[in-house]
Amino acid sequence: MLTIVYVVDYLSIRTGGPRFLMNVFSKLVKTGKFRVFVVTGQVVGKTLITDENIDIVNLNAYSENRLPHEQPLRAIKFAMKSRFTIKQLVKHEDSILHTNSHLPNLLPFLTRVDVPVVCSIHHLESLHCAHTFIGKLGIAFLQDLLELNTKCSVVHVPSNHIKSLIQQKSIINKHNIAVIPPGIDTRKYFAIPRNPSNGLFVMIGRLERRKHYVHAITAFKIVARHRPHYKLVIIGDGPLKHELIRLIKRYGLERNVFLLGSVDEETKLELLSKAEALIHLGYPEGFGIVILEALASGTPVIAYDVPPINEVVKNGVTGILVEKDNIIELARAIMSINRYYFDLKTLRHYAERYDIKIIAKKFETVYCSLAVK
Figure 1 (cartoon, rainbow, N blue to C red):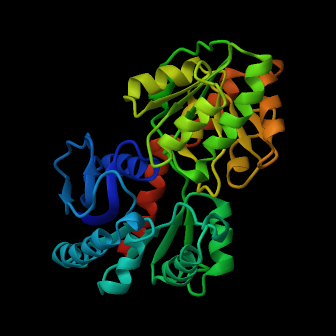
Figure 2 (tube, one colour; figure 1 turned 90 degrees about the horizontal axis):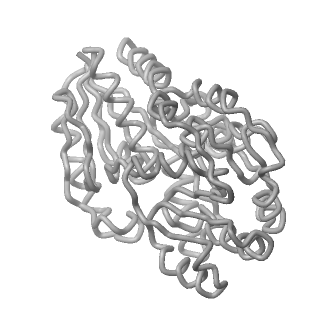
C-alpha cells in the first residue's frame, strides 16, 4: 500500500484547493492501494472525512480567521511542527510527500526526506497585488525564488497558464510539471434542477481583494439604475467583509447586494441553480473551481477575459468574457445576459471532463509513476 503524506495550511471543506484534493484522496483510498495522512495547521469546520485510511493530524498551529502571512509567528510554529511530523510519518520507501500551497511548499527545504515529493501550486501571487515594498519583497523572495525552486519530483498545477508562469520563473522546475485541473462530483450538481430566477446573480469565494468583489458591487451600482430588481448574492467570508458592507451602504445597494457569509452546501447548490449567472472576477487565479460547480449546475459564468479562466469559460458558449477591470462592460454583460442562449446540456458537458473520478485517476497515475522510480 502506498502512503501519501499530504501537508496543507488549513483543512476546510469551504476552500476549493484543499477540498478537491481531499475528494481525490477519498477516491484513491477506496481503491485499496493508498493510505493518506493529512497534516494541517488547523481544521476549519467539519472535515466530512470518515474513511479509516485517511488520518488527520491537526497541529493546531493557526488561528482560524487569519491567513498564514497575517500570523507569522504561528506560521513558524506550523513549519516546525510539520517538519517533525513529516519525519515521523515518512519512514519507508512506499511513501510520497505531497505539499500544498505557499508555506507547505517550502517544507522540503527544511525537511530532508528520501521519498518523492509532489508540490501543488494553485496560483502565483503577483507583485502588483502587493501594496508595500515588504510585500513585494516577500513575494519575490519566498515565492519566486524559494517556492518555485523547491526540489520537487513533480510540481502539480491546475492549468496550462500556471505551468507557463512557472516555466518562465523557475530555475529547476521547468520540465517536471503536471497539469491536473480541479475536479467535482458532477452527479451531485446534475441532480439539481435548473430553475433560473430573473435578475439573480451569485458570487462565491473568500472575501479577499484578488476576487474583485468591489468591481462587481460597483457594476451593480450601474445595473440598479436600469434593472432595480436585479440582485447580487455573495457567498463567502474573509477579511474584506466590513469594507464590502460599507461600500454597499455608500452606494445605497442594500436592496440589491447581499453578503450571506458562509452557507451550507445545500443552500449554495440551490442559489447556483437559481442564478442567471455566476460572476467570477478573480485574478491572479489558478483555476476557479466554483466555475466548474456553476457549469455543472447549468449556470453560465460572467468572468474577466484572463487566463486561466478563459481556458474554461468560452465566450457565448459557457458564459460571457469581459475585458479585465472594465466595470462598464461588466455591468452591460450583467444586464444583457438574457440575450444569450446557453444550452444546459452544453454547459454540463463542459463540466463532465472535470469529474472527480477522472481527476483522481490522473493523480493515481502520477503517484504510481513516482513509486516505481
